[in-house]
Structure formats: structure tokens, C-alpha cells
Image (cartoon, rainbow, N blue to C red; front, side, top):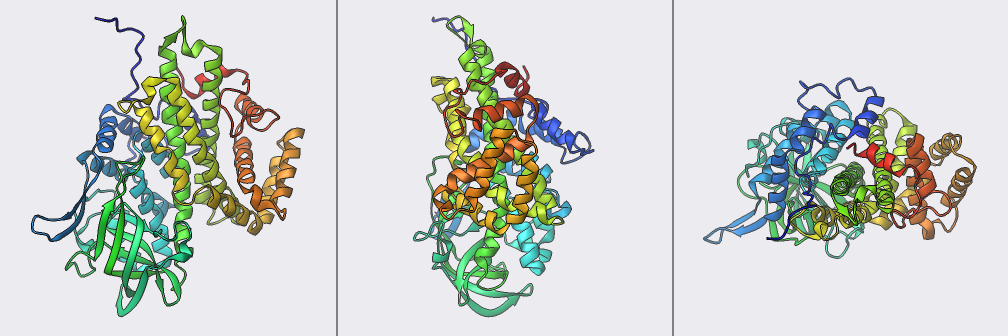
Length: 542
């Protein structure tokens, strides 16, 4: 028998609320009196205990190990178009639904608390946040652009009860909504949509009824009760509410699932290729304005991309620090070795900057309806944050995996799943180039408000960073800004993060990312961070 010593198991049970003091401190700064109430059904402390439990970690593990399976036909050849999932997938959906995170923005105008619930959930299982995000984002879009339809479905849309039965809309206690936008020939170029929408001259819930024919190359969460689908009417690309079952409940709605995507990550959550064969759809918004409607929805889902990537960072950081505190090499604990401290402190700073920006952005979504300046800030910073935070998550998870060495690289541990999960938030809802160009568009449209933010930020910066801010401001308005769009968006995100930090974390963040020789976009652990051990312990108390 060989000796079994110096072995450090990954964490599979952790109170995600109590072990995240920076999260609790930042929420306390916002003076939310309900944050620690145990009798609140959407209580953050309770959800942190639930989703961090050993049982929830097992749900996540099993839901990802047994991928969804498409059942296209029954034994006699009748069309089923059904996707079977692991029972633990349903438990994960039920948990996030019961937390109230999906309905709270629509009911109370609060996006901050749901973002925290998604952040806690995403540290354990990310795939189930896909249908949760799309459903949450669809609610304000339907309420605004199809109010009679929204009111007709209000109770099941806002329900905190999970209902996984495959039944028509009118027989469901709760509804999940998905999206269907991209096609084979177009990808992100939604204007190239060739799926067709033909008016039938029928009406339902005050909306015109259409026949939808065509395809979608990526059809998210295909077992959702309905999808918001882009199809071309006579007026141009339009948005339609396409249910899984026909509106009269007589049969499935002609949505044919061709196959499920064999994805790198996000494996618990099905994604399909689909065709529409005379599917019924209700118009959402004005004819020909479908891209604008779905881009509005994407604004909300992009927030959750930032939340999801921040959650992955937190999960990877916690595992890396835990391992370094227990594992010895060359006669010393990893966490006591100076170079490892540099790596872990750099990761801690990256996560803290992402957390601060995530919370501020979620808060902005709640404020923007009543504050034009807040709305402008949100419009500019959302794509910048999505580009930067989501891209950093991939390198972050790879670095955290390296702390565990070969033990992190195997699929029997959690780090490999986090690493495979990391790219999706950068790709979904607009990849890096799309986000960078959106930052330029928003900066030009919201120039006055952005200038006000620049002025306020300049007062808090030291001389070298002020010069950098001035250069960024000029570059955003330059004729050749498009060729520099990625760099400008990244700098904007970094400055937004810096503006939200204070004390030693602010100084270390600025020195390592914004000053000469910093590592923005570079190699973790290479910038000589002072007070490294204190930054590690601040993020992950022993």
C-alpha cells in the first residue's frame, strides 16, 4: 500500500453566503434591511446554504454527467419532440424558481437581489441559469410589447412554483421561456433572418396570429413552454411568441427538434437545432421591429452573463485557495509560497473587481427607469462589462485549475467543469466584437452622460490614471475607434471596476492593471502585488 497523505479534496459543501464576506459587506453598504432575514422566502442567506449544500453539489454533478437526450419519435413513429433531462436538473430549476429571482424584477423593479441569487446559484451549477435568465428577461419585454398576452399568462409567468409537465400553456402552473434568434446563414447578423411569418388573420389576446416557417440553428432550452422567435414578416424581422403547444391545446405546435447540440460546456442545459412547420406565433411588439425587441431582451440577459462569469470566478477562486491552504510542496504549504501568493492575490483582485461591477450594474438596472443618467451609464457599461468580465473568466478558471495541477484537470473534479463552462457567457448574447462595437455605439449616443461619469471619476484618480482616462475619452470619439474597440471597451470596464473599489484592493487593482507594467489581459501573478496574503484572506477567510 502506498501512503495517502497530503491529499486535499475539493469542497463539495459550503455555505456560499456566510463564506463570502465581501458580498455581504457590499450589500450591507446598500442598506437592504431584508438581506439577512431568515423568514424571507427569497432570503439570500437561506439560498446560500441550500445551493451550497452537498445535496445541491450532487444535483449539479449528476445533471452535467447525464446530458439531455432527444426523444424525437415514440415507438410507433409519432412525433414527440421531447428532451429528457436528469431529475436533478428539475430540482435545480425548482430551486432558482422558488427563490423568487425570476419574478422579482418585474414585480418590484429590483434587479440587485435576483442577481445575487443567480450569483450564488451559478457557483454550483450554471446550465440551469440559462432558462432562468431567458424567462426573467422575457417578462419585462412581454409586459411592454405584448401587455395583453402578458396579463393572460401573468400568474404562471410570475409563479415561484416549478412545473415540469409537458402541457399546453393554459394547463401549466408555471412557465419557462426561451429564445430562438440565430440561423445557419446569419449567426449574430440577425438581419439575415430568412424564417418567415405569414399573417393568418386570426387574433388572440389582442395580438395578430401568424404562421411561422423556417429554422433556428441555436434554439435555447427547447423544452421551454414558449420561445421568443425572430421571423421575417412583410415589414421585416419581427418577434413572435411561439408556444410549444398550439394555443388551442390541440397538438404540438409544429416545432421540430432536429438534434441537440454537443456542446463544450453548459451540458446540463439542452440546446437544439429546430425547424418550424406552420407553427403558431403571436406578434410581440410592432411588425418589423423584432430585432429591437430581442435586443432589449438581450440587455437583461447580458447582465446575467456578467453575473454568471463572476460566479464561476468565485467558485474557482474558493477551490484554488482551499487547495493551496491544505497542499504542501517542497516542504511548504502552497499558500505560504510567495509566487503562489501572487497568483492567488491576483485572482482575488480579479474576482473582487468583477463582483463590484456586477452588483453596481444590477443596481443600475433597477434605477434606470427613473434616472436618465443611470440608464445611459448602464447602456454603455453593460456591453463593456460583458466583454471584459466574461473573457477574463476563461483565463481565470484555467489559472485556478493550474493551482490544483493535474488534480484540477480531471473530470472527476469541479474545476474542469468550470473551465468548460467559462466560454459560453462570452459567446452567448453577443461575442467580443459585437460587444466592443456596441460600446462605441452607446458611447456616442450617450456622450453627455458618459462625460459626466468621466468627470466624477477623474476627481478620484491620481495623475497617471487621469491621463489614461483622458486618452480613453478622446479615443472613443476618434475616427479610427472601431479598430481599437476591444481595447477601449476593456479599459472602460477596468476604470468602472476601479471606481468601485477602495483601500488596499483599489491600490493593488490600479497598480496591477492600469499602471505601467500592469497585467490587464496578461499573466496572473506577474505584477508584484503588495500585501498579497491579506488580499487572499480578505476574499476567502480561513
